[in-house]
Structures are given as structure tokens and as C-alpha cells.
Image (cartoon, rainbow, N blue to C red; front, side, top):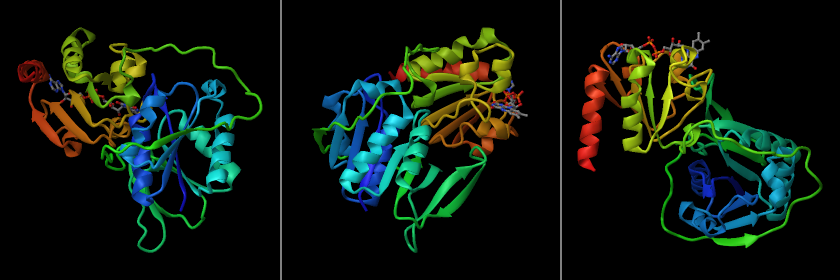
Length: 316
Ligand SMILES: Cc1cc2nc3c(=O)[nH]c(=O)nc-3n(C[C@H](O)[C@H](O)[C@H](O)COP(=O)(O)OP(=O)(O)OC[C@H]3O[C@@H](n4cnc5c(N)ncnc54)[C@H](O)[C@@H]3O)c2cc1C
């Protein structure tokens, strides 16, 4: 089949979505090449992609890529795919990958499938399940073309971790200039970026007012989580807009999403329903969120959350 997986780093560390994309590739073929482009990668860490299923890792650490020019990134990936004879290119979903995957697909003359939520059904072809209507529904598509660009949602596949190391090879693929320059980046929030967070503690209108967010922040701190909120909460300026999750906000796919005093409206669920585990704390046993929850606590958030914080602290 020939599989190439594009991997990204944040603050010098490989993204979990990229490791999952490598695991996805390894579930399709025993030969998987991962490729990293740009100077923001920790070269010593790249070999660890072997544990996730990569047989080889290519790195082109030319700083030209750091501008995030999707055309340049797609050109180099196309070149690498041609050199390797790779027909299937896999991306983990991230804010930066959609444009690169789309451009690459045009360059390769391939089929592009995004939002993939499961491994393909290969019993009679190559059928992929993907989320549509902002995750409210699924569709299955049959891909008949040999060349495929696949963008995989977080948590679509279990992370393979077997301790192996992959060989790392430096390559030079960059060509031509760039069409725009990246002048800087400023974080609007703390150290844990919401779209990347493994644990998210989120709260809604049930918290009554911004003065009550101390316990939400404390719970997030104890768990090493990012904080989030429902849309009305950010509309009322109780919390900043970059914390709003849902159909019109940020989409998150953490391992654990804790929803406190959030009713579970369909527009909210659209941004959180690919979380691995959902815990709901709500005083109304009829709250729709409980239907989506893996674990639910029916109770007053002002009693439950402080007890949870104390229990977590006691557990160390
Ligand atoms: C086009 C469109 C797009 C939208 N996009 C989004 C979006 O992206 N994200 C989003 O979140 N919403 C979105 N909405 C709004 C959405 O429909 C809901 O109105 C919103 O999610 C409700 O927010 P909430 O759950 O915080 O508040 P509420 O619906 O008011 O729910 C509050 C919950 O808190 C519980 N509660 C109250 N007191 C306590 C307590 N002491 N302890 C525990 N629980 C308590 C209540 O039982 C209730 O379930 C959108 C709406 C539209 C029309």
C-alpha cells in the first residue's frame, strides 16, 4: 500500500493526534513512514514514533516550513510520497492540517476523506466511517481510488505503544519561496491548549456567575486539564470566547471531558462528542447530557465539585 504519515509538534513535542495517525497507518500496513517538516521538532523524540507503529521517520528541518505555508508543505509531502511510492497519506486532525491535506490531495490526484472516526472496513473494498454535520451523524464512504489522503479524528484508533524505536533520516524536500511570512504567535490561554488537552473541565450556565469559576479552575489544575465553557457562558462574558466549545466554538476530543452544569444541547455536544470519556455533573437527572455520558453524577455542582477536588487531592 505504501503509507506516509504527516506528523506535527507543539512546543517541541509530538502531538498525540500525530501519534494516533501513525497508529492508524500501522493498522493498515506493516510499513509506515512518518514525516516531520520544519524546525520545531525535537529530533531525539522522533524515533519514538516507532512505538506507535512507524518503521521509519523522515525529517526535513528547514525553517521555511515554520511559516505554515500549506502549499509548500503539500509540495514537499507530494515529493516525499512520490519518492517512497506511497499511495496513502495520513494526517491527524489539527487546525493546520486541513489546508495541507486538501492541497496535497489535488497535487496527488487522490481522494480526500476527512473526519474519519474509525479504521476502514476492508471486507469488500475500503469503506470509511466519517463524522458529518459537525459530528451529529456518521456516513460511510467507499474509496475506490488507489491514491488516498486520509484525515483521522482524534480517538479514532487506540494508540499503539510497544516501546520500539524507528530509524530517523534527514531529507531535503523544500523548493521555491513562501507566499507569506509567519510573524509571531501569542497564546490567549494558559499552558494547556484547549484543542490539544487530554483532559477538559468545562462548565455552563448552571454555575450561576463568573465568580463561581474558582472551583472549575481548581479542578482543572488538580487534573492538569484545560478549562472550557458553553456558548452562553462566553456570550455573557463570564469566560473568554476562546474557551467556548461546540458547533460554533472549538471542537475538542480529549480522553476525558467533564461537563459541570451544562444541559447538553445538541450544539454543545457537536464540539465534544468525540471525547473518549464524558463525565456529567448536573442537578437535573433529566438533563440531555446524561444520555451522552459514560459516567454521571446527579447533584449540585457546588457540593459535588469541591468534594471531587478534595478526593483527587487526597488520592495524590
Ligand atoms: C446556531 C446555534 C449554535 C450554537 N452553538 C453552541 C455552541 O457551539 N456551544 C454551546 O455550548 N452552545 C451553543 N448553542 C447554544 C445551545 O443551544 C444551548 O443553549 C447552550 O449550550 C446551553 O448552555 P448551558 O448548558 O451552559 O446552559 P443551560 O441550558 O441553561 O443549562 C444549564 C444546566 O445547568 C444545570 N444546573 C443548574 N444549576 C446547577 C447546579 N447547581 N449544579 C449542577 N447543575 C446545575 C441545569 O440543570 C442545566 O442542565 C448554540 C445555539 C444555536 C441556536
